Length: 220
Length: 220
DNA sequence: GTCTATAGTCGGATAGAC
DNA sequence: GTCTATCCGACTATAGAC
Image 1: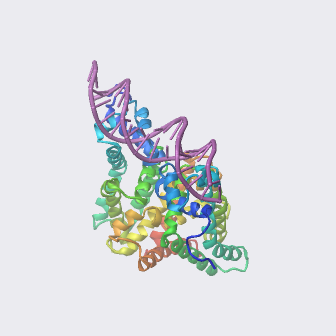
Image 2: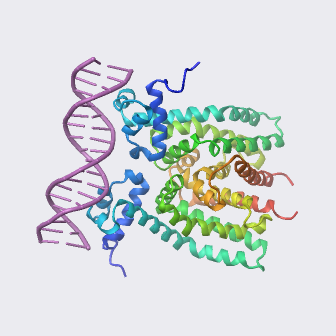
Image 3: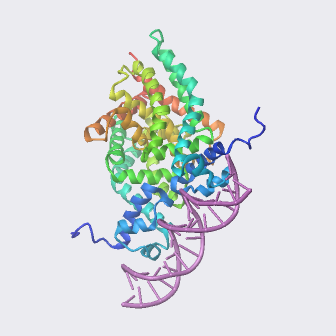
């Protein structure tokens, strides 16, 4: 087993420190000095391992993709098989979709690391760089395809139709907002932080809306 | 009348240039040199008028609040009166809510300036400063209150209940996502940009989801 | 592979002329 | 109120010792 959290090699420590610093302060706002300091490594190690600050930034994108794939991958894979199976009942699709939503909230809103991933990814949405290609092709794109296959039949829409794609983005936005508008939500609810109980409330609110959307497409 | 777009005083030109530069590059990424250059003003004017870079940043928050209030204010005010009127029918509430959604998408997704507002505001959500107080108290907070009064009766929920507040944030997230995940949406739809026709599609998708959510609370 | 030292650039703020 | 000149600190990257 790993002896302690310290002695990962300098390369990996730099990636993790960079995720934190880039996430919190942006590309320009995060200095290589601060990253190296956080990682307990030398500043010169950044040009040495990554070719420069740019290369480190791109390596962070790969790290994020690894982390999210590791957490959401199995559930998405199961959902994909179920969505492709013609014998799957609408009830199964419904439950799978709700489970995906719960899992997504748990990962995105319920963990501290996800705050850093989210900030990094939102920044890339507003101003895409090469890092966006990594994140879209490895994380976002595949997820949307699975959800489309799962939800299309429930809403009576073709998986490749624009209207379904847009409605799915809206549905995903219902979960994203709890990370992206966290400060406003905490203030409005007069909460100081998300707790496990409050995450349950969030999942319940999301479920209520998603159920309404799915059931509106149900034959009367 | 105003002679031309040029001769607004240096103070205002600086605020508008700062909105653009802070929006695009973040607080640290936007240099006072670049802001002053964009504004056609002197660098020394920033400490002179705003006390420093920090003061300029806060002034930008006030400017954003002014702009959004100017555009959404009238519609919100009408919605507020209607929501408070006991004689208002569910059908009126429904239509008002859909109109608010359309207007919100038009402002947030359909205008170029809103890209800058959104970036500024999202940054503040992740890492709130004094600027967040300005934006929440003048823009976000009042909007959420109106929506709660409008939607609560339709969903059979108390306007002050946590579940309603959370479900409303989720609904708002359905519109926000088209700005905050713009790059992913454009890629998934194989669009190069939002056009008026595509905005219609977005509004239609949003309406479909919102109608489903509102009608699920309808007495059978 | 990791360090120190340093080069070269750019940042924000200030002083003081006009 | 607006300018030029300048200070001083922080930045990234490189060279070269070990």
